[in-house]
Length: 270
Image (cartoon, rainbow, N blue to C red):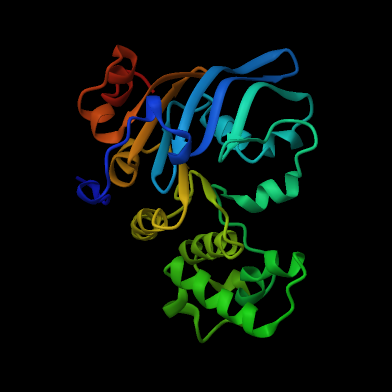
């Protein structure tokens, strides 16, 4: 059954998810780069405190969709969206939204580890310092909490003053996750977080992802269908910018409702 614990979690119908159980939602979402449309009329709800995987072939739009949830696409010239995106029921793609605050509430981790050229300690507290936190006890407690949640504390607790670049790539990625959760976001977006890691580091990150859903709602983009099956509770299959199918992971992988989904997960195309 993978790394998840479905017996302890009630199965949700993500096609009719109540607002109280919804972390993020997109309704009739279209995205354009200039005149080129990349996402087509996508509607889906991301459940709270679960892991939701986005799968599909390279270039299908899954990372583009992920970046809609914290408006990272705003940084791309001539990118615009139509439709509605909400966080806990609040629209986030409308004028007047505090994008910096949105990105505090919706953290993101990218494909390759990107620690800052600072100490391990200063990497973790970076977001807090930006918020003006200076109390040493608060910073110390946050460092330990975040590193424990990222399954890194016992490996680095005696090395907090060392440069983060001295860590292995797998440790660096866990440090980046610790940096993201140090400011206690509501949602964590993971864009292929293990694609640059070795198998052992990948397994460590996967176990970490499963644990993170106890506190956070997690959205994972992965090109690895086995990974999606191992760690996610729900999976959305995206193809050519369209949402083909969205269901609990066991159902989608064992008895998909769409022929295109079956063709993809059985390797007929990809």
